[in-house]
View 1 (cartoon, rainbow, N blue to C red):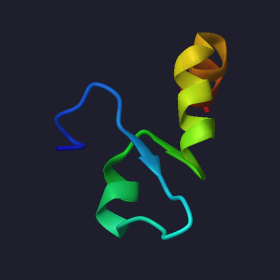
View 2: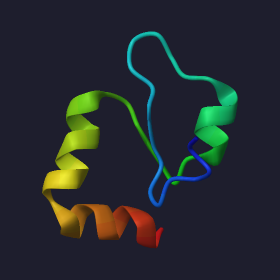
View 3: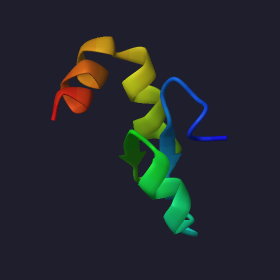
Length: 51
């Protein structure tokens, strides 16, 4: 499912994340707040994707 998405964001959280999810995502965030901040602040997301 992550590979079919236009933008895959993996959230690690307290429990961690599956290796395959992290490898196929474009962005990895440590918590849901950080992931939502990327969506609310497009310039931050653009800078993250530029790396």
